[in-house]
Image 1 (cartoon, rainbow, N blue to C red):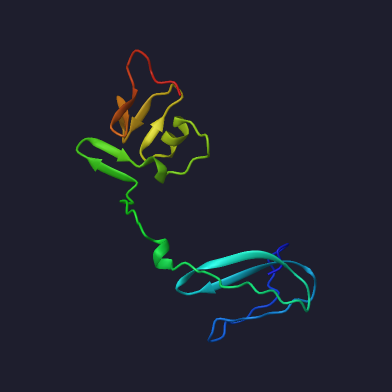
Image 2 (image 1 turned 90 degrees about the horizontal axis):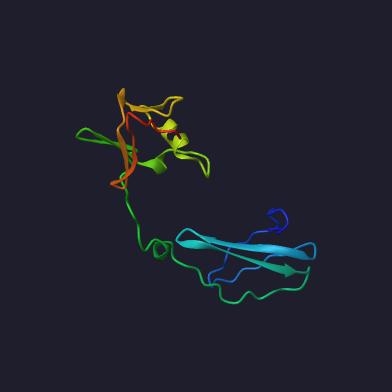
Length: 147
């Protein structure tokens, strides 16, 4: 591929011994992309001139199975209800980078923040918020939460 715009210039399939070759019309910078169904893609940037072959040597490719040594499976539920507690998985709700808590709360289904900063969830006033089991916000009647 041309390294300036990734336009495909030429392609080739490897022979039975793994050798391949291709030609370019112009001197320039190129990207070699080697793919295989069972291996991770390999790419390398290089300079080439017409009529001057380059020996890339032996190209080591990593097995796709090797890339996946460890897999973490998480429950994908953005909302869970445990007794009288509603648990939201915060990173399941998209907000802009650097967003404040109010922006997140406004994205949570069933949660409203009024102009006085009072928070209601599923129609009931929220007295406190926990983050990772630790108290994050405590809302009192004397001092409504201002976000």
